[in-house]
Length: 84
Image (cartoon, rainbow, N blue to C red; front, side, top):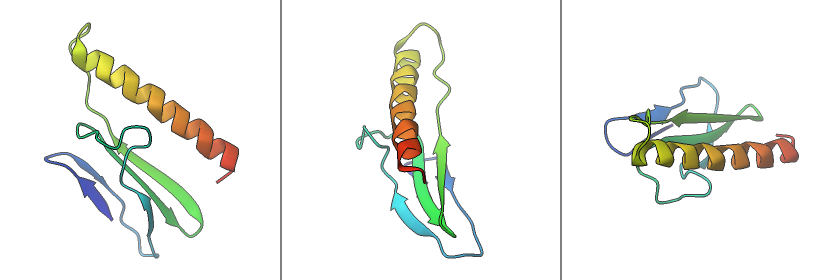
């Protein structure tokens, strides 16, 4: 199971069945700079991500990364509440 928009991407390889949950980054379906993939393998939820570096600081790339991390934290908290 893989996700890639251009040169960078994320992937999961398993000898067990992979059930795709989502390839879209929760909170920003239009995001094309970072990669995000959620899959379930043997009833375990696995989240993989690729995040650009956000340099230089200060600047728009840094602000983008900070906003992305806030969305990631929101998703992580939601998953913790689901106890998956």
